[in-house]
Image 1 (tube, each protein chain N blue to C red):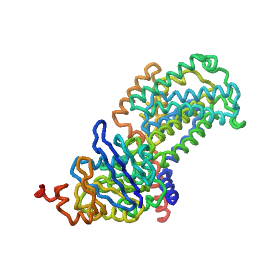
Image 2: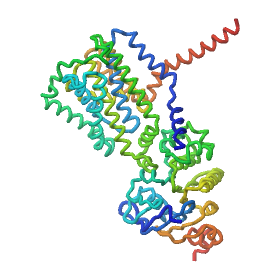
Image 3: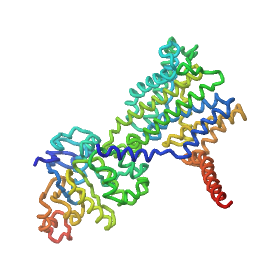
Length: 239
Length: 342
């Protein structure tokens, strides 16, 4: 199967700083990729580069065979890049519903479909963006990305700072969304344990480069690798 | 296309008319019959309201500040004047649309200058464009009449049926009709996904762009539309006063417009209309009490309004209509229960 999203030799960063020296990564349709790594290893920069809000030095990004490297962020979004940024970026002065209808594109994901997925949002449809809890904002950010009917869904630390019960709810919803098909997704996560059940494939970054790329099943059975790159259980086996 | 019906349904729900709005428009219409001696000032209020509506579209919805909105008002005014003077389009409504379109063309081309940069740049660029046009109008006096303005404009009857009268009755209802039609259009636009995306841009352009909103194109579109509105306001001015002079471009006109929106509040369309009523009535009252120092009192009112919080001003104005609706509801239910008792 050809890659739905193909990043080829991408060199990107901010201003003069190169964060990703040479990134090559491909995703096939339906795949859920967990992007792991310690703080400051370039996970968010990679996501932002796919969205198009970083500085690109060289390399290319293709989506469904089409070169989107030269497109502006808004054109990339309409070409099928759905972004759920770390800071959620809810529009404060729009209601829940307006946040979604402002950007919706025709396709299987409608506002009502999103309400089915997140009934809380339907209860809050008339509330303004600044009247939502963190979890509700996250649901709205995901819902808004879905109403764009993207081919690739990029989730940057979707569970960060949320109560455990909300995290459960969100992960269950993400599982449903990715299984619904037609979408491949990249989920950035600090906590590997939370995401291994959801992802098919795990990529670990260190200093802007891929240091490990494996099916998540393999990684589950290989705690030593997780330990080495992420130090998940206290760093006892550092060497 | 499956999602289209559901989206338009959402939009219609958001755009439902509230009782207070209907009361507001009925009150405007009623003024036309209740105060036959005050047509001139009432027409001025409507015109200022339409002009302010135009600024609200870019300021309240897209966050574009402008100190030179009179540029489009002036172009609309002179266009309507020249069209009438040379008899290009005798019918006033068509001439009005043509004048608006000419202003829109100017808006389209200047929008590229305005959408770049931040608020301060925008203030300076818009101000500069208006001053530039004023100077041009003075320079090309063979076309514009220079400082004397356009003389001898005769406006034909509307649709060939309603001739403008000296009391301004036809002018008032003409203004009201134009305002209402353009208001309806603006209302549809701001409740559409296009309008929502403008508000998203106003919140944060970078975020808006990252979720698929073409920021610059949207800003160009709304700026062009606002220029059309301002041009129509200018054209109505020329048509109802049979006059177009250099002051249509003046800085005071742009600055007053900002004050009107500050008074009425931005981002809900009625701000410009309510602000125009308050502004003109205050001006009228103060200048009849103290013909020399009325500017002092107007200035004082502005300072007080801004200190108290201008967002709440429309709530003061809507307080009475709300009370009327409440009272009416209570009376109606009382009448029903009274009927049961007897």
